[in-house]
Image (cartoon, rainbow, N blue to C red):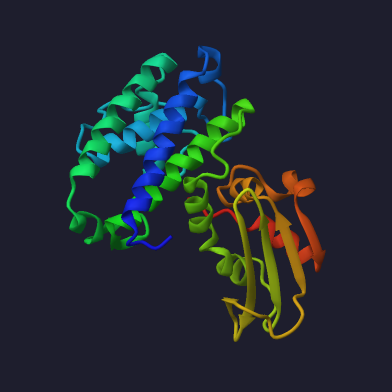
Length: 271
C-alpha cells in the first residue's frame, strides 16, 4: 500500500474500528478484564489505549490522571499511554466500549470532511516527518495489532485476512532487511528467503551485498536459509508479543537453522 493511497488507509482504519466495536459488544465483564500479552494490560486496557490516543490526536481532551504503577513502562510514550489506560480501569468494559464508539464516530466524521491536502501534507509522525497518510497507516496498524492482542487473549480469532491485516503485515515487513543483516548477522554475500504463508501471504528474498541487506528479485547464489511462518505468527514475533523460542513449533527453517532462529528471535520492531 502506497502512502498516498489515503482512502484505502482510511478504509482499513474504519474496518478495524467496526471490528473492535462488534467484538467488544460480544464480551462479558470477565473477558474485558482478561490479561493480554501487553505487559500489565487487560483486554479492556488495550481499548482504553486506543481511545486515549485518538482523543489526544483529535484534540478531544487528554487525561489529567496519573497512574501510580509504572513498573512495566519502558519509555515516555509508554508512560503517557499508561496514564490514559489507568484512568479507565475503574470503568466497566461496556462503558469503555461506549466511549470508544463515541470517539471513533467523531474521528471518522473529521477524516471524512478533511480535504485531500490534509492527508498528503507532511507532519511529524512516530517515524519522523512524513505525509499524514503515513501517520494514519501507523494508526491503522496500531489499532489492528491491539485488536489481535485482545482476540488472542480470549482465543477469539478474527480480522486475520482483512485490509488492516495486509497493511499491518506490510508495515512490519519494512524492517526485514535490517533484521536479516544487522540483527541476525547474515554473512556478506549470502541470501535468505522469508515466507509468510497466510492468511496474509508474502515472500521476500534478501541478500547481503557489501555489508548491506537488500530485498532482491533473484539471489545470486542459492539461499543459505529459508524460514516460513503464517502471518499471525509473524505478527506475534514482529510486535514482540511472544519470543521466537516459544513459537518454534510454528516456524519452519531449512538450511542454516541457527541463522533462521536468529532471524526469528530478532523480528521484534516495537519500542
